[in-house]
Length: 534
Ligand code: GLN
Picture 1 (cartoon, rainbow, N blue to C red):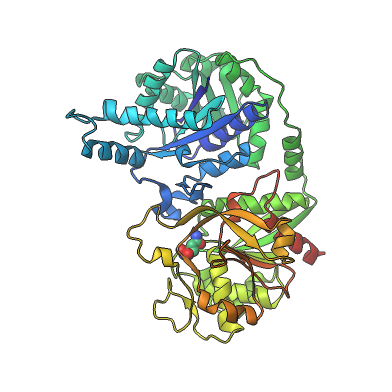
Picture 2: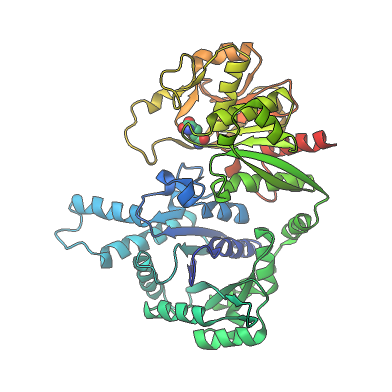
């Protein structure tokens, strides 16, 4: 029987509830339990696929092609699992289902209301995840902050659900902030008390508190919070700011958080196996070398926009005992080859990540050209592949003005063009080529060696592709198509064999990298960077 763990947040947003959920998931998995983590987002968008990365950070793509919240990336990376569409629920998706049912007459003339129709649909989503994964534990994280109007239907649904599942089968964890007042040198508990009052006024008494804090919490403070928030003393946990998010599971384990959670849920505790995670954290804390990787993107003010890429670079760095520093490049500023050279002079590798729209494209072409001409290790992701092909077409294959029709509809040489299957697609939101597709690698290519296998599966999110009319010309000029869709039609990977590592892929390998097993393409990039630095 599945046990449920609900996680809410109080006082402020961006508390790292996702990391707490992922960390608890990790601790339960380390004890041999199966865990599924579900994110409930209170916004009206059906999914985050249509939202600007400035607003919402990265869109994380699952194998089954769902465009989801970036917290799912943390869940996958911490628990080493592969998630599904059902793991991300938004108000928009809930309302969409309810309205569709209403239009079909499924409510038999009833007045359709938030309670019970919306709340029932939310509960149905919890049941769907339970049915799909049959986990020992389903951890459900509710986005937003307690007190928000938007999240009320979710909180109400949880209240009902907990009652229906019976006492002892679920717990509520409230993640909150203890602000530190420098002048008096105190951690303040009042905002947390108020947040718990509000949560209680909705009918939910949390059993566990996780307190975010900049400094350690003393026993006396914990006891005070426990008393005022009506939780047991051993159920108040400290979650201090950490250098690395991967330290959080160990910090919570040191306080026996999973043990306490299991006790509350009447499950016998087991000894966790965290040895490889401990080794990982030790490596993070004591790197032997440092590397600098340039990330040439568009949303450089918000690192969350590329969070999986950044994490993947860190994972690969760890395999070479190296800390990876990111040098952010706003590509709009890279207006010519000299600027590209100046910018890349002190980096060990270049990554051009995915993206949409024409802004900053010329800058990306400049940095890619510099990398290609100077044997700087390079990895292009999705848009990064498209730019690598455009750059090659223009500067090597002699197709002056070559472009993608995404950026110039009337280009003379449309080396990147809308995929045929995309030509009749109307509307945005879930309509790109999404999710896992197989790809066949060319025997003996760099990527074939890197993966160690000929058939791979990777996640996609794009509308454009390498135009097949130009494939032969580009290959004749020396840029190899080393990965293709099984029917041979779509170019999935290109590489420039003269360089040590100049690889670009149409898919998004960053969604499959894990802290304990770096992705082969990121490993390949970092390996080349390490060798170059030597
Ligand atoms: N804009 C490009 C496309 O739609 C690349 C997408 C991406 O990088 N995710 O094909």
